Amino acid sequence: MVRNNTPQGGSIIILSIIVSCLLMLIPLADPLRFLRPEFVMLTLIYWAMALPNRVNIGLAWLVGLLMDVMLGGSLGILAFAYAFIIYLVLSFHLQLRRYPLWQQAAIVFSLILLLKIILILAAAHSADWHFWWPATVSMLVWPIIYAVLRGLRRHFHVH
Image 1 (cartoon, one colour):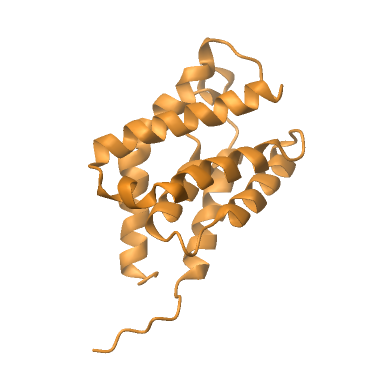
Image 2 (image 1 turned 90 degrees about the vertical axis):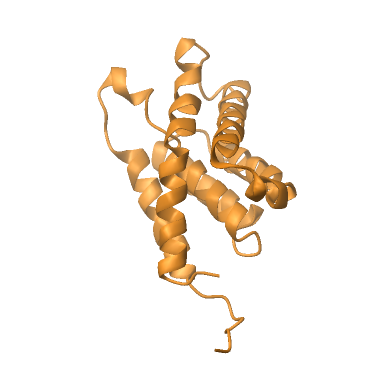
């Protein structure tokens, strides 16, 4: 069988990013909102690791800008943070893909923590003890996000 080398599945990538954006908009009670994983960042991290030629810094910046508008934050802060984190993922994507899932989850924790630090330094959020929760929950759900997106990538032959 001859493999088609033209990129396929761009709509699956975009659809998964849209779903992750919508998951960030679901209203939660105040005590639970700190437990929401960073779905958009997790989705971007997966696609940047899996398909670095398809998901790049520009796409991360556009998604971050969209999230800035959707969440009503200061325009450009999430755009910068997403682009910077995806830059790091793209720089090390070959190494990251080789790590076992638990090690990837630890790196995801660090990347989400970096996202929160950027937001705090940009004065978009205040620092309190809730600071750690999104990174911790994102680390715990990473294996699920990874499995779902990998399943979609394989099922729809996204490459």
